[in-house]
Image 1 (cartoon, each protein chain N blue to C red):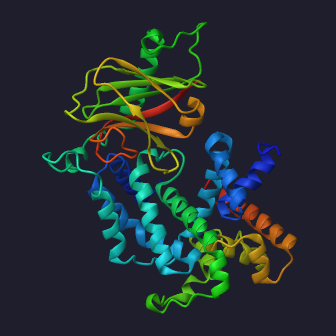
Image 2: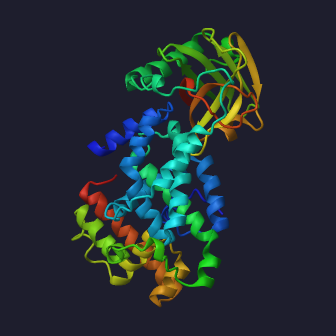
Image 3: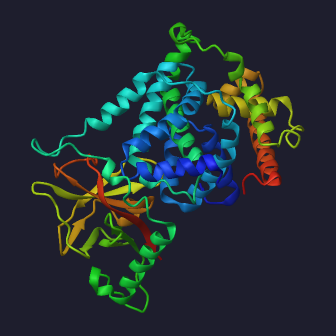
Length: 191
Length: 244
């Protein structure tokens, strides 16, 4: 566990005994990153903030259940937020589909291009130093994984966005993530 | 469908972790995560791998309202009593936190030793030499002293609690036992425990169903014995482990 995660683990252990100052410190340290993730999936700042708030209430109540041997603190937090954002996006899907893309002027997000899934995926691979190992992935494989992870799209939606057959998209995701696992193992990032 | 065939399980865990499952399938799989260590392990492994992708997501500063609402929720917990001072959180910060992993392990070992030495203590009456499959929790006080032993047979519908030392429950409060799931879900109530001696709490379902994904137990002195969620600091806390 790196230094940042060790500090988060320390804060979580204090939140578990209901230390409000530690909760505040944990929120300060992680909320902006977590909101960025939720925003990617929901594409609406107000809904992403609702998800963030709900997630942090879960953290307050459930920090005692965090087990350091099972997951790093950041992964644990990301899972809570992503799961809530995905649930929320599925509930709001009909509404979103009928109103078209949400233009949220009050909360205009300036750095839209930095949030582009393909761009994020490339940066993450470079950060983990597995970009050369992942270089053999086709554009389709990359795009499919990026749309699923950063925007929470399911197979059929990815197929629509990319204009590819459903079976092909499923295979892209499967092979792409197989490769991701192999590259991470090779780099010794995760077991 | 046999979810537990390794390849099938891996594919499902990956789809779940990616967020590719639809409503019904997603809910059913979450149920499975809660009841199978193999499924939980497969999902955690994928979540850890995929977390690599999260690193470069640009941060988005939440508006102040989010923290204000959180703070409000934290303080909206019902006051203990009209005359009582508001709960002070700071005093607890040193509690448990100061304990090392070694201390925790020593606590678990102690629980095992206590149980092996005196299985009759908590109502475990093994037919043979070995203890029956059970869930066991050992809760420590703020000084790290073992205080409450909780146990239930794996398929049992009751939980036996034994106070290893009396606790000082403030007048009008209920020493309430909470189960803390390891997936970040909110704690849920197990029951109210006595200040000393032993008690048997009945469970709404077999222990296996209730405690499978619970990693910790804790006690708070609630002002309302019917409270559905903890509103006051935990005074006892400890691991909940499987004894098999």
